[in-house]
Image (cartoon, rainbow, N blue to C red; front, side):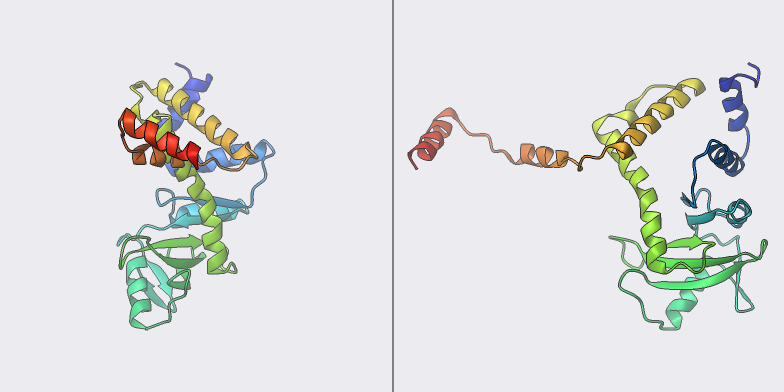
Length: 230
């Protein structure tokens, strides 16, 4: 199949590195008139090169950092990994905030780009944490957390799609079928974001259904008569 067709272009993209394809798609989105100031992404895309590439496009990246031992950053003339920087912050007995643990500005060793790190406590996991990073060092930690929460709406949608629409049980195996499946998922997510109505309380029906007791006919009639005689 030639690369002139849409399916051919998709297959060609699948053979390339995912971060490079992501940057290409961002350029296509902007070329089609969709304006954006921030790009939010998870740890799969969060790397110094990605932040630098977005900065070259005049975009502000906000991502979830991996706690890898392979990448070092500079802070006041010394090199740290994300994990060792967190340990030094803890050892300094710096006061933790109500909505986040610590925050500092570092510099990438390869691109020399300044990044603000925000260490956030991981919910329901004692002594564990997440690391958010952004090239916009003037943003407050609270603003960084608030912006990144918008990306979390995607995760919530995928969870609902798997739970209620059973989209995780598809038997599609071929590449084109998977692309079509993802396209349907994205269209549903887009329609959900365009929906002006308030969120439903569908989960309440599931909870009420599990809480309803099984009673016999005599008990049901007696309860009904009792309500009518009140």
